[in-house]
Image 1 (spheres, rainbow, N blue to C red):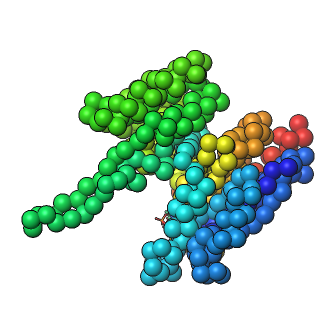
Image 2 (tube, rainbow, N blue to C red):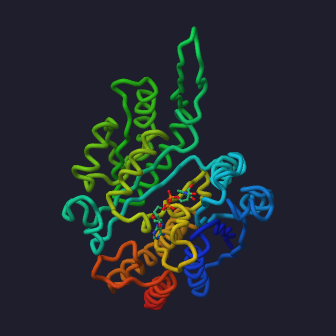
Length: 360
Ligand code: NAD
């Protein structure tokens, strides 16, 4: 029995998560052994308990096998002190659970190729995965300071990784590549940075344990160029916190729709928190028009990476593709001449197709 904690959060979070929970319950009715619990995070946690990450949520999280999160944040929290802001709850839970590996697929369904800013033939059927180190590197490195010396202002940060941090993200990336096309490209700046030289050396060392995966290396400036020139050349990319932050946003935009992209943040025991990459979209919250597919696809990632249900994950992704093929579009992915359906309608369409696939 796997315990799944649901954290709907704020804005459109509860609306999109409701559709994803329906998907989980559908699998449950077909024999998947799961127990579903709910908790508070972000603004919802702050409003009800005074904390964006209530202690009870943390306890539930530690006792669970996987977490599904909607989104956090909203303009009503802009004047709240930084340490009590909704986004802090998210950073805290990632840190508390040591979720050091961030997996962000950029997948473009051929039906939506025109939504991309690139030519459709460059991005149709794009399917790449970026594995980003999430708890180390320059965002956390010491020393860091913003100071004034002899009247001159200066500031600095430190990009630092030890070999253990590199090795554990390498294992996550190689294992992810094994579940896909078995090609891993490690991104660094080894022509300039010592930290990148160590990164590259450790990647090569870990490679000896994954003979079935092809490993290549690329400098980050070239990788940024290649992502917009010929993104389909990549299968899995692995990189540090800073480079991954930038490259994963660029890769997300290749797909043209923020409402379609899931993500996972994992620790070394395959425990993970799964969430759409978008935020709480306060501009459309409560209107019933948000796209729940990124959250539903986050459930597919949960099935694949934390619950070891590869086949169920594939079936769910097929159900989403079948839904798009049938012409269902929320407003964010509909062309100007296409009618848009509601959050609930597209969620129901996925469930219908999922049931058909599960009984086939
Ligand atoms: P956003 O991702 O919430 O919204 C950007 C734009 O995309 C908006 O126009 C929104 O309507 C649209 N959009 C986003 N998700 C959509 C969906 N599922 N369906 C249809 N349209 C969708 O980013 P933002 O406006 O910069 O931030 C809003 C709030 O979300 C802020 O408080 C921010 O801090 C927070 N945020 C949270 C997370 C998270 O929870 N992981 C991530 C990013 C931003």
